Amino acid sequence: MLRKTTITVITVVLAVLAGCQSHAQNKKAAKERWAKTSAQIKLGLAQQEYDNGRIKDAAKTIRECISADPAMPAARLLSGKLLLTEENLEDAAKEFELAVELDEKLDEGWYWLGVTAQEQGRIEQAGLYYHKALTLKHTNVDYILAVAEIYAAQEEFEQAVRLLEEKIKAMPKEVSLKVAAADLMHRCGRNEQAVELYKRAMLMTSDNSYIAEALGYCYVFNGKWSEAAEIFNGLIERCEDKRMKRLYLQVTALCSMNSAQYDRAVDCYSKLSVEERDNAEIWVKMGQAMLGAGMTDRAFRCGQKAFALRPGYGDATALIGCAQYAEGDYAAAAKSFEKIGSDKKNRGLSWLMRARCYEHLGEISKAERAYKKALEINPDSELGDFLAKDKDVRNW
Image 1 (spheres, helix red, strand yellow):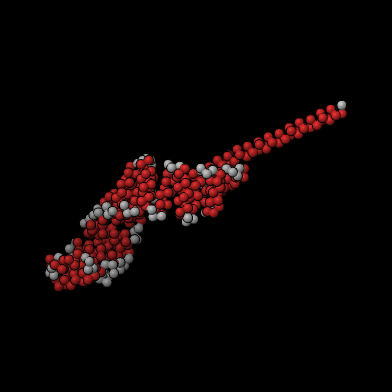
Image 2 (cartoon, helix red, strand yellow):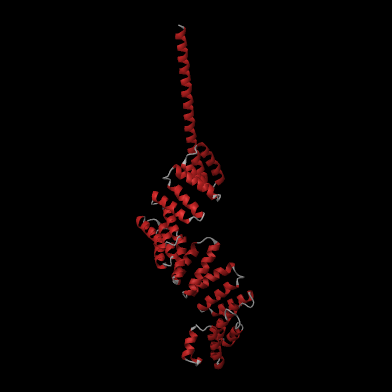
């Protein structure tokens, strides 16, 4: 009877102990499940904080997330991105490395490893990481552009162009690829191809100010001043940033002058002068545009205004002289040009215009000496060909 009782007690104790152990295991498993669930919730919250620019809050939340589940690749990835915002490249790289160790197919982890390596100046290694990311997700535009940029940084321009052209064929509606290819063509000096790509990209999006600006500068480098003027003039109308608007006005004015669209140039300089009334250079440029447009009287007044703002300003005196010459006041013009005979920038113009004034005034010997002096100062001008053929300057 005692033996049976003892066995019964032992059996009951073992059953109780087994139940306790099972309960403890269930409790531990539940705790682990909650930790993982909590980590997922915290990861979502941290990502939202990061996206909204709340970097400190995101950093605090992601630390709590990693504490709950240290082996979550996405958490390590976000932790690395947050460290990058602090320019902590070494620790960021460690987080990205851990992320891809935990999940070697995490394409974004490889991409950000590339970003970190590139920031550290390890271009070749960055290229390997970017290629890995692109292999895992071959349609990701960021990865494509990153690989192309590495090719360009290594001066492997043809490979970069081939990659972009291949991806453009595969994804013809992707505007950013066309823009990147156009940028690359421009950097390679293939401006005509760049222009075509920019034009195609502009047709595909309404938000095209950047593309339009790039296209405008391509036209400038190609010497297509009229087309460039049209582009930048359109940018003026859409631009709300005052600093950029001034820049577009200046570029439009320059392009308009070079394409003999003087009225448009006058309009641009007039708008610039509203906020820069004390800028003598603006008044001179406006006066030059007015000369081209045949507004000689207004050009003369612009020259006077510029000279009043900056006494002794050679460009202002040259403008005054040109306006007087255009009005047929050759004696006054000659005197104006005589004043800038020693001005380094304008002395060639000074002697040439004095020669023309003297000739109109019938002072032929003085005109001949002035022409020869102009030729000495600028022997590469068309004046040299003229004098080589005919010593008689009266026919100039």
